[in-house]
Amino acid sequence: MKNLFLVSVAIGIFSGTTLLVKAQPAVNLEKISHTRKSKKSLKFIDGIEIKSRTSTLEDQPPFNNAKTASTLADNEAVSGIESFTGLQFKYAQLLNIDVELITNKTLFTEIEKWWGTRYRYGGATEQGIDCSAYTSTLIHQVYDLVIARTSRDQYDECIKLDKEDIQQGDLVFFKTRRGVSHVGLYLGNGYFTHASTSIGVTISNLSETYWSHKYIGCGRINTAAVLQ
Image 1 (cartoon, rainbow, N blue to C red):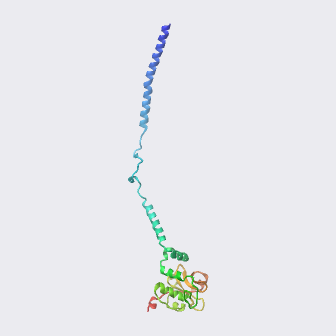
Image 2 (image 1 turned 30 degrees about the vertical axis):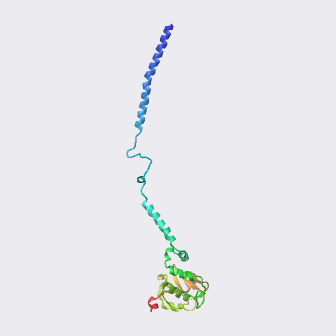
Image 3 (image 1 turned 60 degrees about the vertical axis):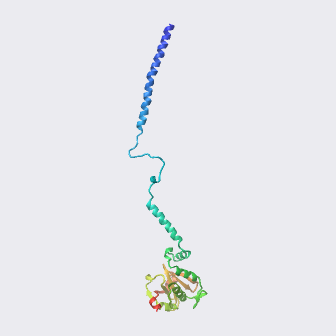
């Protein structure tokens, strides 16, 4: 019996070993099969190329020309704005126009010189000046022309204009008393500079109620006449 038991155990051991030996190759084949399947599943889409993360200047996208041009234009605009003077900004604001339209710096420098000078009938100095002396001074200093001294004579010398044709440097005339009695120099956008009897040298607008009611005409200096 003892020998029979040993034989049985021996048969069982050899039988188990055989099973293990036979099972092992199957497990290994399964692993190999799984590995091969995994490798086959790594497919790349046609047309896509994998590159390293290191980039060069050649890899960079080209400049956006439109954006670059816009940036340059903005920089030029800022540079242009910085080139204007405080005087130009001041009078652009007073006339309610773009600063680049203030081009006659000599004119506005002369106006600034006289700004606030009190009105004095018959006066022609910085201590006091009347309207016609002021316009004749501006015309002489800015345009190098000599015109008549009084507002009435300035009106007679001018080439008469329609109101819509008036330009900077033309004269505007008013009837504040009998006949032509007040004159100013037109600047643009409805504004004119003059020596006001109440506040001195200033800027007013033709659309203001008082001046629109007193307005009687405008004219351009007749250079042919004044240069004779």
